[in-house]
Length: 322
Image 1 (spheres, rainbow, N blue to C red):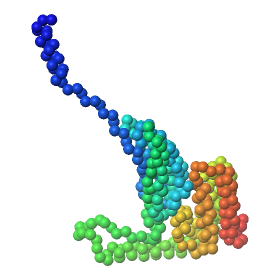
Image 2 (image 1 turned 45 degrees about the vertical axis):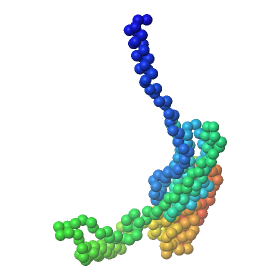
Image 3 (image 1 turned 90 degrees about the horizontal axis):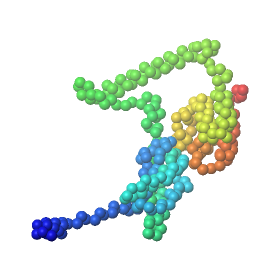
Image 4 (image 1 turned 180 degrees about the vertical axis):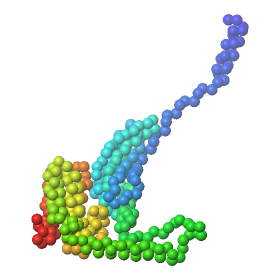
């Protein structure tokens, strides 16, 4: 080896000795086991359906037991369960279970705390707590115009050339409009009373509300074996329409829970509790859990339909049974 080659080799070895070795790659940090409840939407209205999601985050390769379903929760019905599903990454596995729920009472309620069993690789079985979740169900009556007052006044927020409208001018205009509306209503009533009976304004015999109700109940009973929720919907709608037409009430715009909180109408004082019981039993069949015996539900629905038919028969005026 020449002196020049020996010098070049010595320089290369010195350069390699002075260079630093690359740091070893660190493994990705694994997630700590955790669980939470997510409610979408976070605020419920009476009769609304929503999804409550149970999210469980664990290290990769961890086995997660099933999320237990509560037997009964005040304020809601559990309509069904979807999942579990899982998504994986280098840092964590995410297990998701979805509960489909429906709000049935107004107030503040809590989804109870529970737990699942997990087994991490190289660790003994571990209990993972799932915290409770509070939620609130509110009524929709105040959001529907006209259900609290016949002519609800709302203050204007527009500004005129001279600033905001103040004083007694705007209330006076509202009062004048109401007075004119009352006069017009009186004129229409007098014209209707003056019409002859042969003018076609009088209801025909075939238009009696109980006849349509009896036909709808018969149709609901016939399809109960094939489509139980739809049959229960038909029976509930038929009963509500009959009560509205026969007693001049407004049951089709309210849930059974809201009707329970109302004062019984004068014409329905003796029949109110019986009506609410029928509607609540129909609700239990319209929104059942996924599990259950179909034949038991069909038998229960046909029993309720028979009681509705008796309710309708008792409410028919004498001399109008046909």
